[in-house]
Length: 511
Image 1 (cartoon, rainbow, N blue to C red):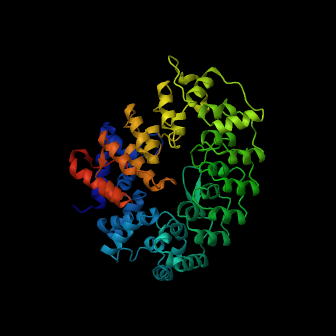
Image 2 (cartoon, helix red, strand yellow):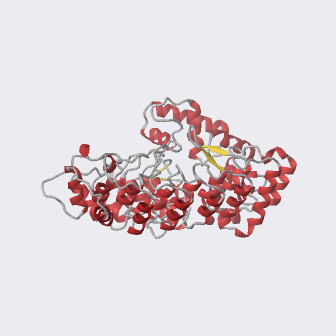
Image 3 (cartoon, rainbow, N blue to C red):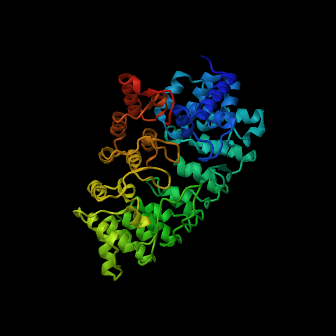
C-alpha cells in the first residue's frame, strides 16, 4: 500500500492510543525512539516522530517533506542511500546506485554526500540560499562532513574540496554546530574528523577557521587508529586540557598518542568529570584508568613522569587499590616499589584475591559495600583480553552481573557491542534481563548491530556469533533489520534466520 501523509498521521494516532493503553508492542516501539526523557508526558507530535524514525527518517518534518516532494517509495530509498553514505556502508551504496543511478538526482543532500560538484553547483546557482539553508536539518557543509564516501570514492577528493570552496563563497560557516542534546552541539569538524575519518576535509575546515577546541574532535581523534587527526588538530592549536583525550587514548594502549598530548600541554591528572552531551565521561583519572585498562608499564611510567598523582583518591579508591581490584599486577608492583601501596579495606582485599585468581570459599561481596568506582567491574573488564575467568570469579562471589553502566548498557549488551560471543555466552548463562533498553533506546539485538558498525576495535570480532546467541535466546528480529545493516554477511545471516524462524520476526523494534 502506498504511504501518504494522511496514512502516516493515522498510524501515529493508532500508536498513541495503543501506547496510552499500555500495549506492550507500542511501549517497545516508543522506547526504541523515545523523543523525550523517561517520565515526561508525550504529545501527538512525539508519536509522529516515532513513525518517522521507524522509517529511517530523522524527524517527522523530514519525512513529511520527503514524501510530499518525492513520494514515499523514492523518498525512503533516498533516505536509505543517505544513511549508507553516512555510515560507510559501501556495498549498500553500490547496490542502490547500480539499481537506480538517478536516485540522487535533484536531491541536494545526496549530491553533497556523494561529492557531486556539478549537481551541487547547479542547485546553488539556481538558488544561492541553499548553500547555507538546512537541508532539511543541517546546512550543506555539515551534511557533506557526515559522509564517509571519501573511503569508497577517494578520487572525488578534489570535487569534495571544490564543493567546500563553493559553499564557503556563499556564506557557509565552518564552525556550524548541529544540536545534540539540550545544551550541546556537534561541530562540522567533529563530523569530518571524528565521525568520517576524512582528513582532507578536516584540514580544509581547520585552514578555513574551524575551531579545533570544539569539545569533541580531539577526544575522538584518539579513536581513529592513526595519529593523522591528532597531529592535525594539535598543529592547529588544539588544547588537550579538559578534553579527556589522553585518557581515551589509554583505552587503546596508545603510548605515542599519550606522549603527543602530554607534549601539547595535557596534564596527566587532568580528568574532566563533566557530562558531554548529557553523557558522563567514559574515562576516570589517569592511574585509575591505567589500572582498569591493564595499561602496560611504559604507559604507567609516562603518566608518572607526566605528573599523575599516585595517591589520588577517586570514588573512595586509591590507584594502588584500583590496580589490585582490577588485577593489574604490573601497576600495583610499580606503585608498591615507589612507596605508594595503601591498605585495602575488607571488600577491596576480597576483590583483590579474586583478581589474583582465587574464589574464596564461603565469602561473598556485598554490592552495597563495594567502592563506587568498582561497583560495575564486570561491565568494565569484559572487553579486555583474557578477562573471562576473572569475570566468572567475580560473579561467583556475588558481584552484580546485570548492572547497567552510566549509559544504561548492561554487561551482556556490552559483550554484544564488543563482538565477544564467549563473554556473551557466559553472561547469558547467568540469566540477565534480555528485554532491557539502554539510554540510547537499544536492546541486546540493536546494540550488537551498533557495535558491528561503530566499535573502533571491531576488526576480528564475531558479531554474527553474538547475534546467533541473542536470537537463540529468543530475542526478536525486526523485519527491517537485514536491509538496514551495513555488513553484507550480517545481512545475509539475518535474512536466513528470518526465513528459518518466521515466528521470531516482528514488524518493529530497535535496529
